[in-house]
Image 1 (cartoon, rainbow, N blue to C red):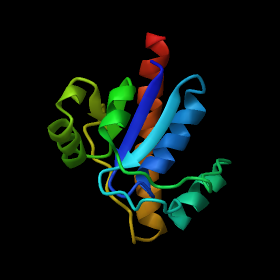
Image 2 (image 1 turned 120 degrees about the vertical axis):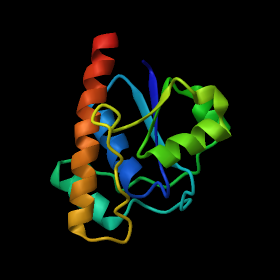
Image 3 (image 1 turned 135 degrees about the vertical axis):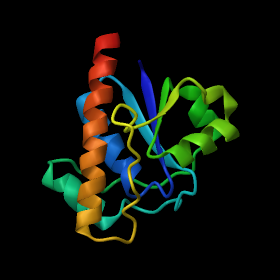
Image 4 (image 1 turned 90 degrees about the vertical axis):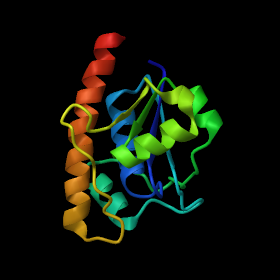
Length: 144
């Protein structure tokens, strides 16, 4: 496994946090993120930056990007936050079938969007993301 693309909607809350956590867990893997409706060029949400900083991870340089066909073609694995995003990517880029999953696939959970919500919503999303990251990182390490 050489590369992972993490998907959410705006690419400013969930996927930047997941990207950073995956990159920390899997330093030999290239991890990128994008959005299905990205707020192109925007920084990560301030609350996402705060929560990640509390974990010793700086995501201040992150800028939101729109998912593209090329991004999906270049990676070994695509991780979405929920079923709707997974379906959107599969419909838009049918070649991703069989290598796109939810980040919470093992626990059968979707990660709710904390955008414009308070700290509690961000902490809940981050907890679900972190649990998913741990499962995926372990699976990927076993494959390597």
